[in-house]
Amino acid sequence: WGNRVAGAAAHAAGGLRKLSGGLGSRSGRNSPDPRTKMPTLERLYDKNKPLFLFRDVPPNEREALFGKKLQLCSYCFDFSDPTVFTREKEIKRQTLLEIVDYVNQGQGKFTEALLDDINYMLSQNLFRTLPPTSSEQTGLCTAAMFDPEDEEPSLEDSWPHLQIVYEFLLRYVVANDIDIKSGKTYIDQSFVLRLLELFDSEDPRERDYLKTILHRIYGKFMVHRPFIRKAINNIFFRFIYETEKHNGIAELLEILGSIINGFALPLKDEHKTFLQRALLPLHKPKCVGMYHSQLLYCITQFVEKDPHMADVVIRGLLKYWPVTNSQKEVLILGELEEVLELTQSAQFAEVMVPLFKQISMCINSTHFQVAERALFLWNNDYIVNLVAQHRHVLLPVCFGALEKNAMNHWNPVVGGLTINVRKMLQEMDPELFEQCHEKWKLDQKKRLEEDEARRERWSRVDSLAARAA
Image (cartoon, rainbow, N blue to C red):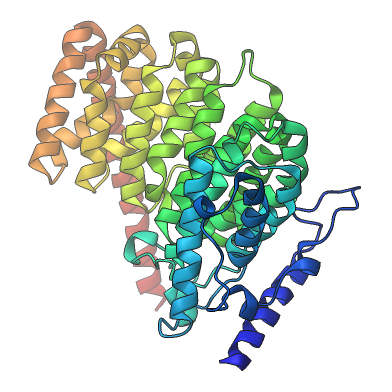
């Protein structure tokens, strides 16, 4: 047991040495390093000298006891083997619960003397190397094969301790007795970066805590706001263009949804660039379905704030339109409907031709869900009104697709929907509809003549080849 204790203590000290960049330290101050006054693991968990409860000591001694309990909770245990250090693990859990309760009751104050111990305890418990996924462990995971829906999330073994540490961190971040100047010295950019790295955890419970904590940090420390947005951008870029593997994209987008909602008007160029270079390319990865609802909220927030962004959004959707993934097409058609509901006529006119060429291709899709979702756009009164205003341009664009579907589509539901849309357009402008119908018949006749001429030319080539042989 003594060897295991010594090994655990050495491991804890080694982990701290690896924390570079002065995480949690007070720059420019000659404050004592927590490591120099840290008792050994054997002394902290000594059966003969247990720490008192807060209620059992006088008020003037509680701050010192708070520091000792923080030191006790700074040691981390290996939870892969539940039979090792069971007594010490339970002592640490109870101590963490007592600390959180002590802070919740308003008795525990985050004084300057305790901030070093607090940050050391947080860094030791939270900032760790995340384990690989099960598919990565077997060497079978590639960016193309990664699909979080197909994998069961791996829950964190140390969650009985980790959850309470996150509760403590949340109280630490929102505490009123820490002024912004002191707080930003400890909760610095390095601290924020390490929190962002933890968003890749497979455990959804941990990501939920991280989402709440990072949002509180963003709200409280205004000096960190540009840095947080830039760091999230970098996570997105790496996910889109390098790995296509990340577990926390949905949670990061939820945070950004609240941030975008608070953007002032007119929108800064920085925010417009963020939409074009980070949010819209998030439609590329195969696993977009895992975070699409959060992405949609961010996109529509931009269009609601500035209707001129509708042009940018629609062109971005067309740029990243899926070619072979029908489920993504269905998702983007739904997103397109919500964006069009927020689009004004002037912006619609700028993108309507390429947009309805793409919609026409979806109407003719052999995948019935894609064709059905494209035809459902005509159930939206606002979109029908936009089409009616620009019918002289749009009806010739989509007329051929509707005629082809009505005659040849294999799915009867799609065929019925097509006939309904066709009838709606006919009632909208009978004269224009008849003109388009006549032009379509002439185009079909010309196409048949061209096909016949092509077959005749190939027949002559075959005859010449046979004669030469």
